[in-house]
Length: 185
Image (cartoon, rainbow, N blue to C red; front, side):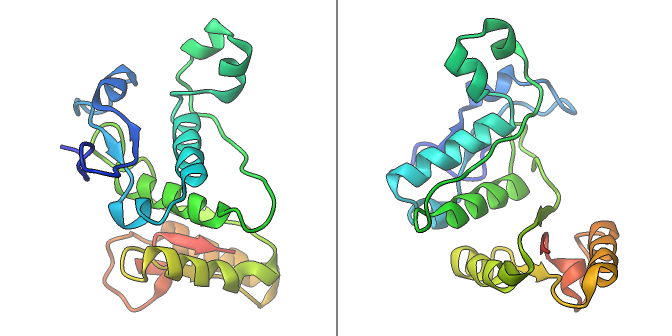
């Protein structure tokens, strides 16, 4: 079953169950619709909804942007994961779009299991605290919080990353590196 109802009013469906079935099988899980958490979907403006959908589909091999633009059928048939770049003027909601994408990938996928276990957000050192605040603002501080690796230089940041990346996500410790799926560095 999908995590959220794809038929609900205002649902932001990133992938239908039928589309999910076309993706390579994984552990015999059936294809399910991937729907953005309604808590986030209701905050997204129309262009942001389009951006989240585009990024998710590009990352999961459903809509390679270059191939679609060129009409390259060979590239369109490729289902390999790829990347994408989201860049535009300030104030258009790139942070919210990125966090909606990350949160969706951490919670669900086209086979009923998440497509990401953790997310690493890399930004200039001066923006680490801002990204922590954005995570709290948009994810409500309840869905997911971000561990922040700021200050202390490169060695400290590397140590923080290694601890975060190698820690099981289900630990019930008091350390943010053990509990939180997002690291901002």
